[in-house]
Length: 196
Image 1: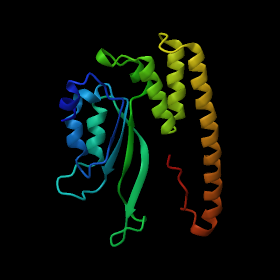
Image 2: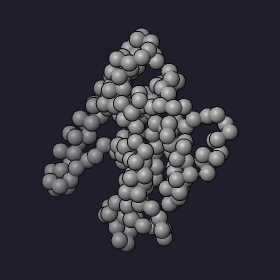
Image 3: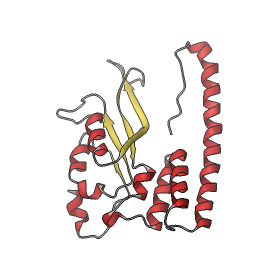
Image 4: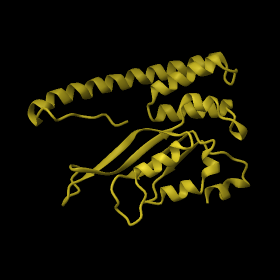
C-alpha cells in the first residue's frame, strides 16, 4: 500500500499519476492517508469495462470527491468503434485530471499545512495542466492570506500565469477558427476540441 510505503519516510505527496490498467482504485484505496494532502491526480479512467471487475470513471470520481478532490477535465479520450480502434465511436477510456480547489489548498490542515514549497508546487501543477482560472484564484487567495509567499513572488507568479493564459487563448481562437472552416466540409455537427 502507498500509505505503508510512505509512512516512515516523513514525505508528503503533492501529485499522483496513475495508469495501472484497471488497478487505479485499489491503489487509491491503499493511499487514503497520502491523499489527504495531495493537491491533484492524473488518473487513467475507463468508461466501459475492458477487464472483469474493473472500476469505472464514476467509481474513481466518487472516491476522490469524498476526499475533497474534484474532477476538472479529461486530458485525453480514446474512442473505439465496435470493430475498429480508429479513434471514432464510443469513448472507452481516457486520462482524467482531478484537483483540489484553490480554496481547499489554502485551508488544508494537519501535517498538510500550506508552505511556500507547496504553494509553488500547486501553481506549477496548474501551469502544467493550463488551469489558469484556478491559478488566478489561488494567487488572489495568497495575496489576501497569511504571507506564505512574498508579494513580489506572488506578482511574478501572476505575470507568468497571465502570459501563459494569453498563449492558450491564441491557440484556442485558432482551433475555433479551424473548426468553423472544417465544419463546411465535415458537416455542422463537426467540431474541433482543444484538449490541454
